[in-house]
Image 1 (cartoon, one colour):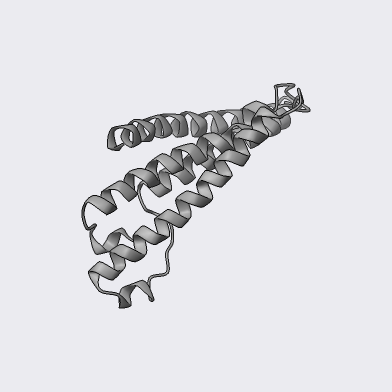
Image 2 (cartoon, rainbow, N blue to C red):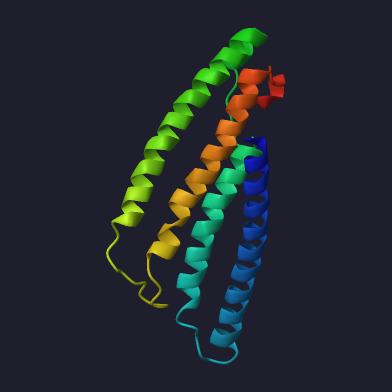
Length: 161
């Protein structure tokens, strides 16, 4: 599972870098065209929104991989190391169950889409909508990997979710 999680992380990093570069390029080009050439690009806004959607779900998954989300630990800090570990395991089981439900619903949503197209670029809407199940799948993989590590050994006390 560790290998799969690390492989997914590499994909997320490369995709995130490419998406950030593409958003920057598209928005810069749109500004140049609008204000200097007086010929606005009708598709730039939609493209940047779709890329930002993908970036958000991939970045959220990477945040779970690096455990960089905000957490409130004043209650958890009162437990012993064993209690913290049990609480983390329970918490991860709940999160994984919620993610599994969301994954099921998001894949069902994608598979039942009508042949709808975006308004400006005329691309199939399943392309931007696919960011939801892909990001959630990657997040599930990262959390499952951490859960397996958590069960195998006691993590550092700074590894709270």
